[in-house]
Length: 59
Image (cartoon, rainbow, N blue to C red; front, side, top):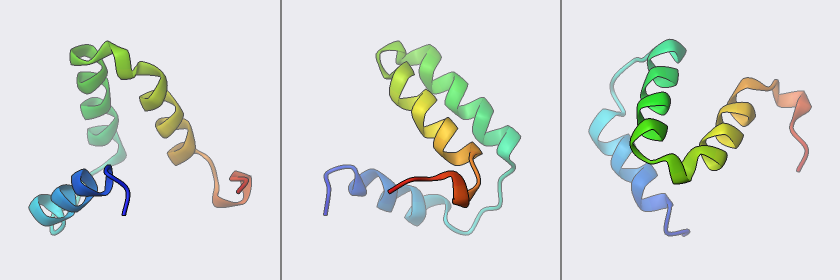
């Protein structure tokens, strides 16, 4: 288990039953970067990863 899995598990535990839109997610990601500009590159890469089709993702 990676250290980051803890946050993913917390997200799933706290909000796993909720349904969200991609617009909501994008808004939350923008707010995160506004509050944590040092994570802008990682957040941008994650957003790009989510935006691409599964066929576009290289292992």
